[in-house]
Amino acid sequence: MSAPGTEAAAPTANWPSAWLAGTTDNSAGYRDAEVAHVAALAKLLTQAGAAADAVRLVDVREPDEYIGELGHIKGAALVPLATVEAAAAAWPRDALVVLVCRSGGRSGRAAASLRAMGFAHVVNMVGGMLAYNAAGLPTTR
Image (cartoon, rainbow, N blue to C red; front, side):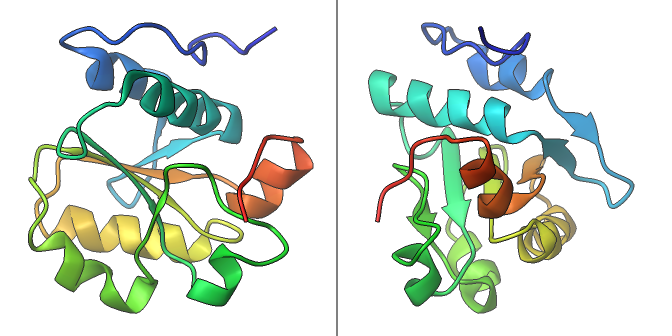
């Protein structure tokens, strides 16, 4: 059974906003999401083929980590932390951006940077890929 708000439902016009309702405020101005909530989003994106300009699932680890022992979430784009601001310059500021790293630290820093750049909907996955793997959720290598 899924946690409330984590079910992968058919997308509607306001589904990114509805998905955000299952996240919590972070004092740095972005939002935090538990791994099950991010897993449900990844499943929805895979099934629905959501447009990349509406939602971005971004892994900010280094390339060797992305393909390494912890793997990555299917559909997550690799954008190492050092390159996030440059890459984000081309992203729509109203897109939902969900950030992932090994433990949540680097993705939290990336989230704070994106908020400072004017992104409206920025989410950090709490616990990173360590928590995602501990929860037994599927990864890709």
